[in-house]
Structures are given as structure tokens and as C-alpha cells.
Image (cartoon, rainbow, N blue to C red; front, side, top):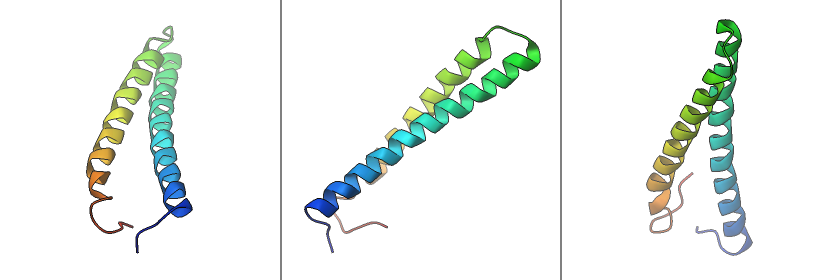
Length: 80
């Protein structure tokens, strides 16, 4: 059964909200790791910035992969 109307719109909202949360979590986790490493090594926010950039890159890659694998959703049946 294909979702229609409001159900389809809500499904898309949840899907893209989840992708945004995944990106934010990746950036925050790697930035927090860099912040802890900065405190341990007593360095200015060098590793926090590097961690944020790595988190953004990996978060973007994760979103890209999910969008590529999910691109066939509309052609075929529902995926759980």
C-alpha cells in the first residue's frame, strides 16, 4: 500500500528530519571528541575544529549514501 496525501508528506518530513539529525549528531560527536582531545593536550580549539570538519564530511557522506539507496523508494513498493 502506497502512502498518499498527508501520510506521504509526513513520511517525507520524518525521513528528512532524520537525515538532518544524523548530520547534526555526526558533527557534534566529532566536535566533542576534538574538544576533549584539546583539553587533554591543552591546545587551542585545533582539534575541535578538525573534529567538526571531519564530522561534517562523514555526516554528508552518510546522507549522500542514504539518499542514493532511498532513491528507488518511489519506483517500487514501500520499504520498512
